[in-house]
Every structure is written in structure tokens, then in C-alpha cells.
Image (tube, rainbow over all chains, first blue to last red):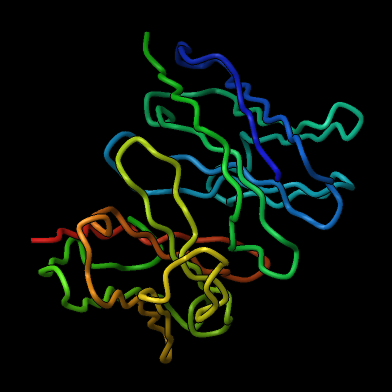
Length: 119
Length: 111
């Protein structure tokens, strides 16, 4: 059974770069999209972007200029970098897996990482 | 402001049925049968309850069903149970420019 385990810095200062990694265990990278989704405290879900095994990415347009996703199939993990963070980027960040035939269906989720941006 | 519009809250008594709507546009919900619904309990990651408008993942109760008409998708929960109390989010594909959009979420209260 596929599991996603994520980690990264939980406290950042404004203008710093957020960096999170999600490790995949129990499954293959092939045939899936690997996404990052965030949820500000008390608010709804926001899709950040996705990457596939080949490194092809799709990003949410409002975040596109600050987002970089990468994948390392040899280490079975994928990563998110979000530059120039502000307080508005404070959120729980989730990694998730969707299938290529249904890109909005996130069957598997990481445990979530709270990232707080504060000076 | 979320791309998809959901009611902020709905409520129902145990055993009753409720429906949560998710209104988008002809660029997302109206154009693709790629609408999913997620249940989220406090402090937990979301869980997919319905995908591709009407499909139910293995292990999800058949009390949950989905539908779509025009630019509006709906999630219906029949035979409400206390454990159904949670936040529910819809999600839709929105084409090759915007890709994935979520609704603002609906808080379901079981009275």
C-alpha cells in the first residue's frame, strides 16, 4: 500500500524559501501525478501544482512564478520549493498522488506539514 | 475567493439525506467529468469520497453519491450518521491553463 511521508522546515521568515520533500513508499512513480496542496489555517484547499515521473510539471497560475517542483525517482521522493514566502503562505502543506486518467482524484495523501511564515 | 462555489454549511439529522452543491463554470465543472469530492475531519488529511463525478472508491460507503448537471456538481449523503460530520470539498479539472480548482468547502453538521 502506497504511503507518503513528508518533511521540511516548519518556520520561515518572510522572503525565505519554503522547501518540503515527500517520500513515496510501497509503490511506483510511473503512471501517476504527484501534487502539492495547501490549506491555510481555518480555510479551504488550494492546489499548488503537480509533477510526473518524467519531471513534467503543471503549476497553479497565481503561484507559478514562485514554485519549483522536482522529482528524484532514485530516492523515491519529490519536492516543493516556494520562494519569497509571506504570511499568506502560512498553511498546512500536503503532498498527494493522483492517477493520470483522473488528475483531480487524490487517492493518497501525506500527513501534512504546517509551515508558518513569521518575522 | 475559491474557483468553485459551495455553501458554507449544511446540516441534517441522523438518517436524513443532504446534498452539497458545487457550482463552477463552463471552463471547469461544465466541461469535464473530472469532479471529485473530499471529506476532511479536523486535523486530518482529506479523503476522496467520489471521483469522476459519480465513481466511489473501494471502501467508501454507498451512502455517498455524486452527480452533475451543467456547471453544478452535487454530493449526496443518505442515511446521515454522526461520523459524516466533517468538511467537504469539491474539486474539478479546469483545463490546461488552470488545471485543478477546489471549492471553498462545506461544513456538514449532523444534528
